[in-house]
Image (cartoon, rainbow, N blue to C red; front, side, top):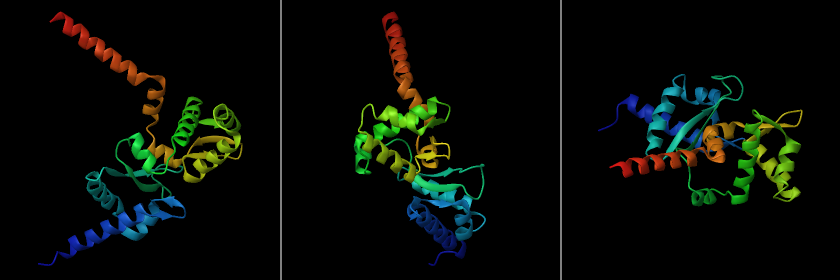
Length: 197
């Protein structure tokens, strides 16, 4: 029995949306809002919600990141992991442990400085543990991949990809030991209630 025309058209649009978001365009993953509107129609956001529901079964999600003012045609949509990968998984994605450490330090420093930090300052901090040539090459790669951005004054700030893939609050909480302190308090509470009974 053939599918109804509306269902067939919807399946076709879902497949087209997945193709646009899974594959790279101009060296960056995903697609801009205007590209999706042109390919899928005005109801592209509804199609992306349906795609997100399907991707949830696979542990993936559709993310939207504003590159300037919110809800503009230049917003980028792409597919990323739902939740956090394990360290062993991150290695299979092509990340070296020292690259992850450098990105973590750079992001933490930028966030601690209110969202912007001088490039030279970030390089100086990283050069305390890594060779200069490695730091410069790695920061350039982070900029190309969208994790960091640099303005004309030489200030680094979070790129669109870091805003989409990194939970900033959780990162700072982990670095400050917030999660560990909450676990300790919870364990102490359990001990107190355990000793009373």
